[in-house]
Every structure is written in structure tokens, then in C-alpha cells.
Image (tube, rainbow, N blue to C red; front, top):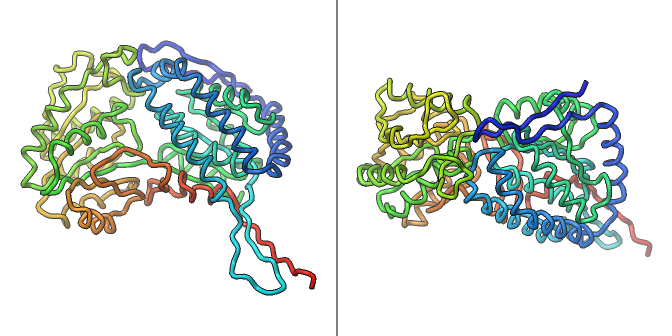
Length: 463
């Protein structure tokens, strides 16, 4: 039975989009088309695939003026930042297209007389991308473009909150002339998504979302023996060393904590500052936080929009209340942000000190514009606290000593170590995490490994 999927704007509660979920018959038709298209697609050259993907990138970028306000209405990010996501989409797509030829080249071991031996990377078949709402273009492109470049068919299930992004991807690939059925957007409920994954009709799942969502993906795929790439939760930490440039550290970490209302997988949620720098750092950080403008994201003056919904804001407010009850100090008066109202998805940014790891705000993912700051006496104390987490996506070290940063980075239980920057994905580097942040790798030439399987050729040459 069909069920309506509805996107409600976090700005004002107005309906943005509505789609009927696919019927079983319609879904089976799409699966059949994907299989048929992929069989022919895998025989095309990398150069041919690149031609289609480049045209799709151009078609998507041509829609930027429509996408930016559409995205703000759908998920609440200030419109002034919308073009940044599209620039990131372009950067990642072009890098992965360019990297494909080398990444997918056959591996040839040391020659043996009388034999031609090599290992190919061949497509898996049909890759299913289950996308999140917070960066729906940036995260989706991480798997969709390289999956197509590797010779796979792709099925995209956009998040309900950003349904229209699925339409945009479909329009872009259709405009590029991609063979019918090779890329398809699916309107599915959570139950339908699980059933499709468990049916054996897809050959890989790329999921970005919550830990609970990742568990659901793995449970659905149980027994299918297919790879499941998971990018899940985060509680990313920063360490400001005694030799750090405080002005630069504050400027970047304030942005890293509060951009997108803190709803970033690699956003900064906890900061450890060497005690010699602590007071000055906190003072400047609070000043920078108060400079934000919380309001309607469609207004160019707004720098902080609403959270995705009132439930998420309520969870974050409860973290703050519980921390204060346990002795934490809140440095930002919500009255400085008139739009902030209890029960509303509009939440003022908050800076907490006198926090510790007994508090949820320092242990559990907030995904909100709140951050806790703790003083530390040494590098060892900072590393121990940074590693005291169930998550491990990124960590940043703020210092003028690269050697020290690299040595400390070796001790950090994360997928990416930053020095003097944060909250950024370089498409040339592997994007990966450890612990409950998930498993697998996207981006970089290595990102092609999970989108392909190995096939060996052992050919005896006639003499």
C-alpha cells in the first residue's frame, strides 16, 4: 500500500514536497531496468562514463539558483551558505571522475614468463545510496558519481526531509543523457528500504545517518553477503595546544561548532584547551558565538537557521539543562537571540564550561549548536579525553608544531586528523571513521575499492 512521504519545512511548518512511495510493481520495474542498464554500462570505457558524469555535474550546477533556496526551505540552512554546498559538490564530483582511471586500472604483479596475469576492479552491480538530509548534495555525490564511474547502476533514496534533492539528481543525469535505468531515484518508506536491501536486488548499500540507522542497514543486509558502507555518528573533538594561535583557533572552531546549526557529521562538539590558553580562548570563543544571527534562513542577514525539527532541539536543550544542573556554566544568554523559544526548533548557540565526561553533552552526539570546553594540563590528558568516546570520525589539533601534531595524531582513534583546520572533507583523502562512526571509505582513489570487486585473470600465453 502506497504511503505519502512528506517534507515539512523547519522554517515555518509549511509542506515543501510530497511523494507517494513506490508500489511493489513499480519498484520491481525499476530494479529490472537497473539490471539491464548496468549490463551494458559495465562494458563502456571509463572515458565514456566520465563524459556522462561531467555533463550531469554541469546540469546540476546550472540549477544552483533554484537549489539554494529550495535547500534552505527544506532543511533550514541559511540561504547565504547554500552555494557552498554546491561548490563542494562540484569539487568532489570532479575529483572522483578524474581519479577513476588510475583507481580502476588493472593491477599487474611481477611478470612470469609464459603467462599474462592481472587483477581487474569490476563493478558490483547495483549500488543503493541512502542519503542524509544535512548535506544532501555533498554526501550523496560521495558514492553516486564514483559508483557510476566504476560501472555500477545506482539507486538513490533521498532523505524524506530533502526529497527534492532526489529530483535534482534525476534531472541532472537525465539531462546528461545517461542510459535509462542506470540512475534512478526511489521514493521509499523505511520499511520498504529494508525490504529492498534484504531482497538481494542490490549489491551494495552506502548509508549516511545515525547509529541506529546503521544497525537497521546491517540487519536488513544480513545473509545477503553484500558490502554496507556506513558513516554514522560523531562527537568530534579539538585540542588547542599551548603554542596555538588563539585568534585563528577561535575563528575556525566557532565556525566548526555552529555552522549548519551544529548539524554536521564532522562538526566540533567538544574542545580541550591547554590551561595556559584556556581563559583567553573561552573569552574570545564566547564573543564569537554571540556574533551569530539566529533567524529566518531565507534572510541574507541570518547566519544561524533553525534545527531540523523541534524534537532535535529539545534533545539538545535537555543536554544543556542537565549539564547546568550538574555544575556546568552556560556563557550565552538565550535572550541575546530573540528567535530562540522553548519548544521551538530555533535554538540559540551555547558554550558550556566546567563540563566533564560524566555529562551527556560531552559524551553523546548533540548534532546541535552547543559545545563544551575543558582545560587540560598536557598533551597526554587531551589525547585521553579525545579518545574517550564511542565515536571516531575526525579530530583537530591546533598548534604551530607539525611534528607534535603528527605524533599526537598517531594516538587518536579517528579516521581523519586535522591540524589547524576542521569540518572539511578533502576529496583526495579517504573519508572514513572508526568505532561507532561506522566503516568503509568514500572519496579519494581508495574510495573506489568498496564500489568494486576484484577479478583475477591468469592467462597462459601460447608459445
